[in-house]
Amino acid sequence: MKPQYLPLSLAVGVALLAAPAFAREAATDLDGVVVTGTRTEVAVEDSLVPVQVIDRAAIERSQAISLPDLLQGRAGINLTQQGGPGKLTSLFLRGTESDHVLLLVDGMRVGSVSSGMPALQDLPIDQIERVEIVRGPRSSLYGSEAIGGVIQVFTRAAGPGLRQDVALGVGSHGLRQASAGLSNRGERGWVSARAGYQETDGIDACRGTAAGWGAGCFADEPDRDGYRNASVNLRAGLALTDTLRVEGHLLDASSFNEYDGSVFGGNEAENRQQVLGGRLDWQAGERVALRAQFGRGNDDADSYFAEGGARSLVSVFDTRRDQASLQADVGFGSDQLLSAGLDWQEDRITSTTAFDADNRDNLGGFVEYQGRFGAHTLQASVRNDDNEQFGNHSTGSLGYGLALGNGWRLTASAGTGFKAPTFNDLYYPGFSNPDLRPEESRSANLGVAQYGDGWNWTFNVFDTRIERMIGYDVGFNLVNIDRARLRGAELTGFATLAGVQINAELSHVDPRNDSDGINDGNWLPRRARNTGRVDLDRAFGALKLGISAKGASHRYDDVANGTRLAGHGTVDLRVEYALARDWTLQARASNVFDRRYETIAWYNQPGREYGLNLRWQSAR
Image (cartoon, rainbow, N blue to C red; front, side, top):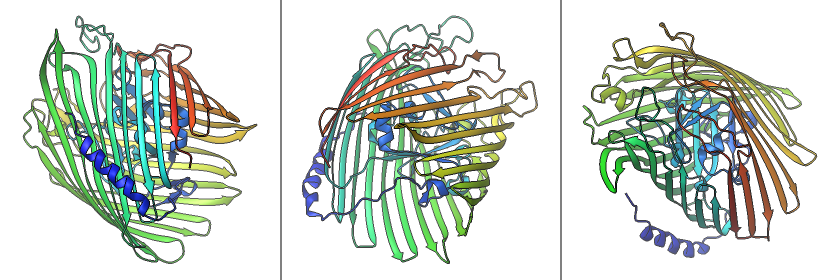
């Protein structure tokens, strides 16, 4: 699957050359603003649910080489990975399952329709402008999957005027990467085109063996497992009038991944993540705004088995999500906003595995109220989803905030969530149940925060109960049998002391199996109870130094809690030097103490690594 980018790139290049005909338009400053938590723009300090924004400056400063690398150690997040860059990565938010987190790219749902898992590892970080993380249920605004929270990735768009940038990088394990971008923004129009490439020889992903029981990947392949990713990101828009504008976007990332496997599961994969969409915004009046959005998310995964120069197809799981939404925001009174919307979605799967059904549609409608009354803030939302396979399901949320003065703020929120069964759950031959019902959750959050001039801290405690979780009974039948209780706390803070920028994030979660049976009271697998990271950055003129410490306590790899994985901590160092006004040289050393650890039993993680990047960006 090799997309033909050249004609499309040439078309965008022609548009770029024409773009100076548009007069200048100031870009919207989104610093300190989050849209994912309410589907409207809200200042981070005014959000009634815990949120975090990672902007482009923070992404470049971190020198992260992947989205999982960027998210590691963030508040509420547990990550597991099957053996180095590009390998299957799972994200657990606040202790919920990895398919209990909704992933959006530019407002579009992404992820496999068959497994319910998004391919975090395949979203290229060089194409990302910002990441918004919302911790806690948002099903009352987005429907299925948002039990643990929502993560939204915004791809890079055009800044003011004409801009160009190029980046080249090399690193350990044969890492080589390159990216380039060209954009222009005028008063009436904006257009941007970006391309990226990353390749690594990788590490030996799995130390398992084909002999014995429980030996990881059950394969004897002690070799390097490489990875490569080629991506294109295109965006263009036009302000048709002072109140009406239209925009289109495309993100296309194709990857090739080697892993340790067998003739039954393959050892090579060709994957493709594609998000294509359009948006129409109309400011219908001083207090009335309408937005229409439509698009498609494709998740294609084709597996092969390669041995002795021969290669055979093992499986095809190509899935797509067609989506459309309409939202109206009406302001009334003083600091009050009423939003209502409809979301339509059709899921479809094409596979070498025969499913009893290969498509389904969902229609969801929601209403949300946001109001401010002096020191008091209120948010309430309700939603109903009508799904072709499981019928109607309703969810709701309620939030309250109290400003105490001197930057102090108290918040309280509660909400329900649900997760629809996947196609694998319902129809995979021999391992499914077409009578499954959605998983359900109830959550509550209490928070206190203080925001000062250039500093802030937040503290949140939460309790989540999940019922009708999908699992196997004693007869190995897939049923809605499991329950879980998740309790925890998160502490975040930012400050600048003696010129040192300090970012700290600490999390604790108690993820317990709450089902009847022999595993009742056990930890849910692959979640560390304690995680955290601290980032320190200091500039000395043209020279910038940084250090990041990340850690996680021990976890168990199985539901019986019989396989214990030790905790770990790593330290990363980074240096950045401005060679000239347009040129920047970056160097990093990751896991400098060469800690050996596993987040999944039998699957290796990289040891000490080095990297070097050279960036050029046209002066603004």
